[in-house]
Length: 516
Image (cartoon, rainbow, N blue to C red; front, side):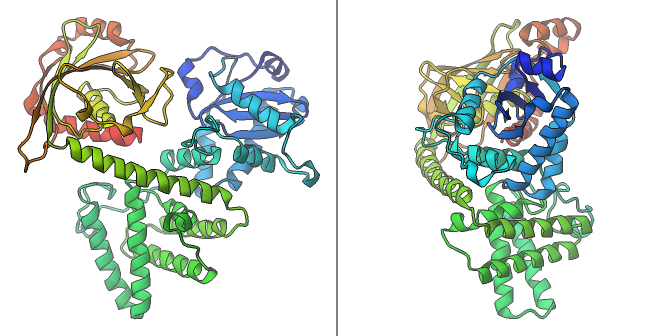
């Protein structure tokens, strides 16, 4: 954890601020502190999540401050849309190593000022007559303030950013033993998360689940209900590119998002039936030895918490969050289908060269026009053996592109998820920048574009040729790579394409999952 403190606060806490990498200030572990009267606002720089601590003047050392901060943070987590099983994981990740700095993230002062005005300003909307707790104050600020311009329709609520962060970065996977029974489902690892195999595995599980229910003398009505719920839950997991054993608490998100995702309101009886069906699914997974006893307990706890949180009186967050998600997903799917179809018969030949390095290190690709720009970046980075531990951005003559969750500081105008390779013409050039510290720059040149016959699509991506083994992360950029090459001549050898294609595609998939 990195905490930015002003000079007066640092002196009061008796801490010596350190100099750190500026990129660390926009990580989920980076926080900024602002004192205002009897309140201290501790805000997460990336998620803009506020934590409220009262009477900051009572802290005269860093230990007492961290203790109070941790206590209020955990209380806030317990009230936020997060499965309880993940709170300990988040706590450990946040408080494992605490460092103080005086450096500030670019947007942090603005967001802190917004929170300060909402909390103690003359136009504060806080209802002080209700004597709100610290957690209630934080939730009110988070619900009233977004991390982006309020005029931006695509802004995400603060609690939405928190939920996404916890859901994507913290999982409680089941760990089934890879016995012969598991192999019958077509496992290729201890996880079912194989895109090509997911549908077949789901069908096999549902067939076995039907037999399991029949063997227990369940009525046809109950069997149909339980199978429908299981099928629906599998589809929900597929939407997040996960499976039932990839994250045991995903069922919590399934329940709290169910009403908005389906545009239906569950009655108390319907919610009870759904929870019973989900618990029965957990029993089946336990019977099949796909869940351990501990896995089953976590799964059932997530169901209970999801049901309780769904029926709470204050559900505005869920409604707003899921309505926006549904609208965005429908629009994204519509746009993606239309654009991808338009470019699907185009074939692109392009050459990518690592700039500022000699001898030339390069790759040549054969790709379909329906290659989305984020996939293009993954393919290029994977071909140069980047490990994906840093931010990246893509530029052409008019636009700066990046993933929506990133902030490269390059004046981003467009999302990588909304544009395709097929939008470019022969002779066009782009620049992919990876790791804004080491500044690896890859020049992309469109060599040629051809049209496939009417009844054929562009086909799979291919790595055609290249030279140089690739980059090395955190080595100091091209200067550091050149020093390594002096001692290791294999760095600059021509690329062996015969054994590279399969490994390249595998690395591309790994980068895609990592950034998502």
